[in-house]
Length: 84
Image 1 (cartoon, rainbow, N blue to C red):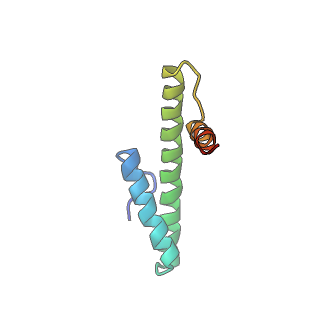
Image 2: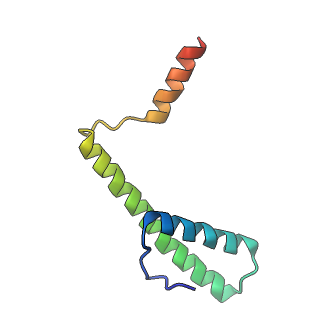
C-alpha cells in the first residue's frame, strides 16, 4: 500500500489510484487495517484532485476574463431551441 502522505504524480494518476481504491473498498475483501489505510490514501487523493481542479478553474477564469460560463447549460438551451 502506498503511503497516505505521498503526493500523486499527476491528476490523472491520482484519479486512477482513487478509482482503484474505491473498487478495493467496495469489494469488501480487504482486512480492516488495510481498508483504513486505503481510505486514508483516498482522502489524500481526493483532496489533491479537488485542489487541482480548483486551480485549473481559477486559471480558466483568469484566461477567460472572469467570464466563465456554464457550458452544459448553454448546450441544453441550444438543444431546446433546436427542438422547437
